[in-house]
Image 1 (cartoon, rainbow, N blue to C red):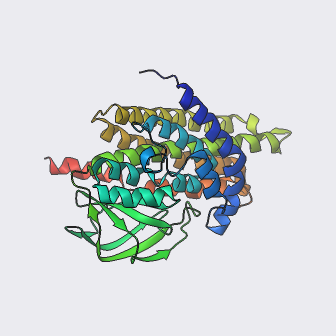
Image 2: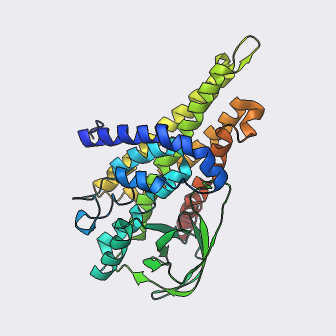
Image 3: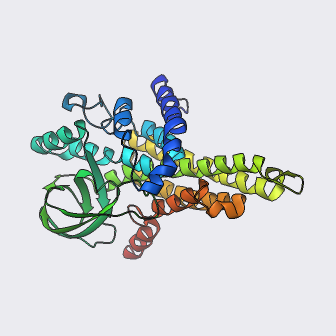
Length: 347
């Protein structure tokens, strides 16, 4: 395995890092308070190639050749450093676009790609608890997902199937949960809603794509928490010295960054396995997502501790990051529970 970035990857990382540091971090607090991203996000994201990077070039997108999940993980890490909610919006089109490109018929491809290439959104929902009733191409039940409030399509992974469902006629209610507040969440009630089954589609493969991206973004949030904590600990003085000199706080940051480094490497490894069509990618992606979820939960709590009482005030960034960390555990279901149940079934 070659750990060096190629020229294109290096350029993407540098570009997204600048975008994240200069723009996304500046928008994050207001977007969180408003429960919506800034209006200019779509314009800037379009200029940088987000939202259509997984849409084939001949359908109005930017994808030529195979999709690189390693590049996506590198990008997701930088976006996570900026804002988890905005990152979720910028990444939401990838799974629907790749799934339809792989398993959709010509009519489905035309409809979805036309929507995405014109600035539309799509999102993924995984029925991890089996709450949806699937009867052929009809779905009944309730779902919740980021970007669902603005999405034209939702890719539903349920009952071992992938079903692309248009949101036209779907009863949706926008919500603003505590985590990823600006990610345009919504609940939707489906009453025999008809979609298009992607014949031969692999739920396991799509979840591997999504979990790897989630893991990379979660690590970015964890690192951002420690960056904010490091900056604050240089300014905050107690007992005649910056609190960043206290051994206990040095250890908190060091442990968080060590775990983040390990989680980032596992996420990149999972992405590399996906790109090389290795079936172990499914398991690796799941474990990367679990470890990254643990990492971001612990790191954001520790960052709040470093800030002390100020850590709970939304005038400071780490309070938001701690709330955002919870969403990484909720989206797509609980893999730990899934593995426990799978092992019990094999006995």
